[in-house]
Image 1 (tube, rainbow, N blue to C red):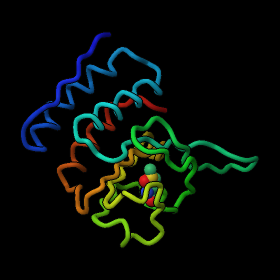
Image 2 (image 1 turned 30 degrees about the horizontal axis):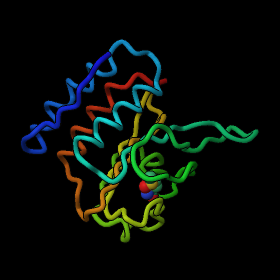
Image 3 (image 1 turned 120 degrees about the horizontal axis):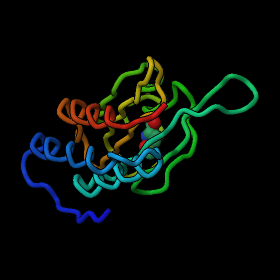
Length: 164
Ligand code: SME
């Protein structure tokens, strides 16, 4: 695979519309999850220049039938490795099984500050067979960076991922 990276120009909607088939082509034919998640984070980070883009995956831990979010492929500053259900924006998105848009992370009770530079955030749960199996987390250094357009298209991108 030889892929040159070209920044797509246009409105945010136009960028996403061009990015989605590009991401589909990027992960098509590769059955392994890690390289696909890694390439998606790289493509989103390069395209939008966000502070942090990455995945957390729901994984079992301990001897009990318990699970937590564990850091997966990401682009950006180092991040916390484990998040419990209901904690922070990621754990709340997991608990509620819904996308959360946080315009100002300082106003989100329990927000986990992996980077002091983060100002706003969107977290999209990956739902398969009615279970949340992971989340896509995106952080920005700017307040109010994410809106319904990001929600709509990031949710579409998430649907392209084969994950069990
Ligand atoms: N801010 C997130 C934690 C993950 S980092 O942003 C990468 C949260 O509150 O869940």
